Amino acid sequence: MLQINDDVEIEDRKELYSYQKGDIDAIFERLDNAAPNYHLLYQLPTGGGKTVIFSEIVRRYLAKHDKKVVVLTHRIELCKQTSKMLSDFNVKNKIINSNVKELPDQNDFSCFVAMVETLKNRINDEKLHLDNIGLVIIDEAHYNSFRKLLSSFKNSFILGVTATPLSSNIKLPMNENYNELIVGDTIASLIDKGFLARAITYSYDVGLTSLKVGINGDYTVKSSDDLYSNMAMQEKLLHAYTEKSLGKKTLIFNNGINTSLYVYETFREAGYAIRHLDNTSSAEERREILDWFKVTPDAILTSVGILTTGFDEPTVETIILNRATKSLTLYFQMIGRGSRKLPNKDTFTIIDLGNNAARFGLWSEPVDWQHIFRAPEFYLENLRDDAEIEMHFKYVMPPEVRAKFAKTASVDFDVDEEHKLAVSKNLRSKVVIEKSLDQHAGMCVDNSDSLLEAKQLSKLLEPDIEWRMKCYANCLSHCSKNYKEWLIEDYKLKLTLLIGKKIRESLD
Image (cartoon, rainbow, N blue to C red; front, top):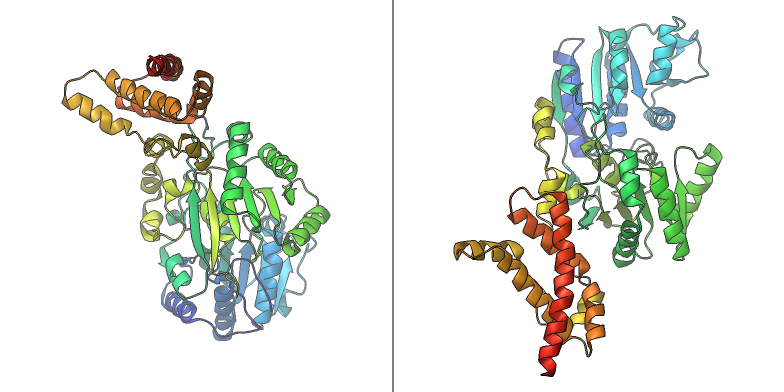
């Protein structure tokens, strides 16, 4: 049984699935009737079998045309996997890697698989010339590195394949290089047909206003490291793991190496089996770690970047997004690492610690790829920003904290509704704070036997206080950061005084 990155398992030349056959027929309709230099883009979700599909396209194309095919990839692992898949489809092919300087035997092959950078260098050195190329297939076509080779195949039919037809660079939209997009089966459909596992998503609200966006349009590594390596976020991550993924094989994605190392130390000190992997790891170290991850049932692997493509471990049960991203492609790539279905695996878990599901929607929700292809700037400009997402956060008291206030029937308080009520009655907005203070103070007094114990309980309310004051500030207009911070500190001081007052009144 052969497992190929981004593809369902195939056994030798297994019969193609009906949705794959339909997409291949649609692609060949263009190949047979469009101009010889037509540029076609094809979208299919990770796990749908893109490599299987374009391998069958190569086989059928070569049987019908007296021309050759080039398949371009952006990573050496994908080169090897693609070459193996083509061989399984009885396509004699040759890999053009860094060891290949010239091609004296090119007439012995009908198909070439090449790393884009390697092929570009060979062509620029004028040491290699590929003759009679009728079809060029570009894997992971959303990467822009392939643009530099398009001029070398001006008379060839270009077929780009990707799970996410959105350019990695907004300044270089895909509709500038492709005439048309064909959209394949959806994630939801592939789940219903039994080809992908169903995702169960748990989102934990995270304040991201401290993050900065870099020139590539995504959050910077430094600002992400600053946020995700702090103690509060490490505790939130560990809590999320123990609550939703304890004992499951877990893959954690981070934005920075420092964060991943902090994660490694946090989990190791907690007694969990965890390893760390990043792009500075040697090939030998990477192989050893991935072998360990494969055979260890409750393994946790914390990583940075390198496992988003070219990596396939179907036994992964949980994906933790311990980062925020503005890249729709990266969002799907990370989650796709857990979507493989096995006989004993129908579902997998997603733990989102970057508000990513709120930004892009759930992984299996429908996406209008045609609209994104036609108007990528409009799509990106209308993504929900962090401030808007955080406005819809709702504080939920952790069970262990709620247990400390067991004698209080309800600990909820809707600041927005209370503010609307105050406005409707022409009352001062500060009555909202007064009501909130009265409730918090009552909770502390009702659930304690002394002033000291009541004050200690009030410390457990600080996350709730910060949340309520943030909501209150949003109800007002043009609140400065300093004023928001003052609101929180003033609230805490008033809460302490009010607790003392209520205790004294209860003793009278």
